[in-house]
Length: 112
Image (cartoon, one colour):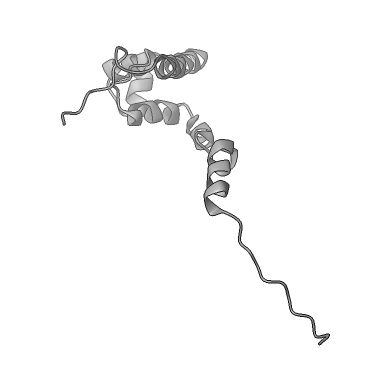
């Protein structure tokens, strides 16, 4: 079966909105640091066109480009909070339900 590329037309609206929000956050961080797109792109090791797609929240742009832009501004540590297992309440609930309860035999008393 052929792979359907993810695009703004095929992705759920929440996915598109999240990508645009991330791109906008990266643009805001760049502007606060008074960096030109050319300078940030050079520091991140990507070209200016790729940075423009990142800042636009393009779903077709590799996640590595987003991470590189964040890294170049010292913001990559915030990525460790994404999908953090400790905060995944639904995943923890499903894991606990799949585990089931273990039944342990009662300890025998020595009072025969």
